[in-house]
Image (cartoon, rainbow, N blue to C red; front, side, top):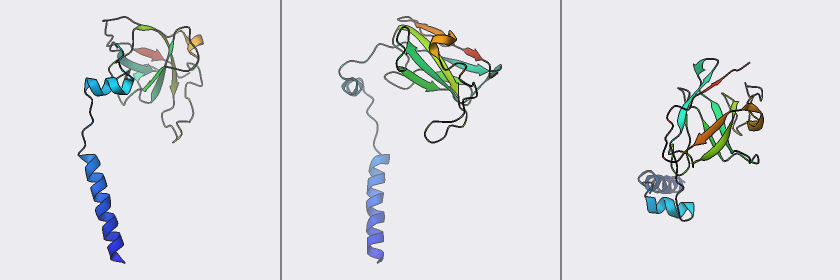
Length: 152
């Protein structure tokens, strides 16, 4: 009876130890292969989202290409200091140059399926109606793209 339990524990130990020691290959060649051949040229874009005058955790930012209002092309979420950064090839590496519109939701305690109550009450959810534009120029990092939003 104890043999299957011991054998299971040993196998589990082999599987988990193999995963914990593995290093993620983030070399340029590996990233190019994952991206289908070439990495996209990106420019760093980051900032802080303030809600009612204070940096706020849990605000979702959605990025749309200007003139294309199908699905958003990027999404990020503010951290505990209200900071956010856009990612394309790697975490926080930036965005492709271009013109974008930004939409927001504020769901501080999302449920497992990412649903919950938007405390902005959809006020900033429609990128066509809210007027938050972002222009990303080649070679021009933007380290303080801050947004000031109101919950009411």
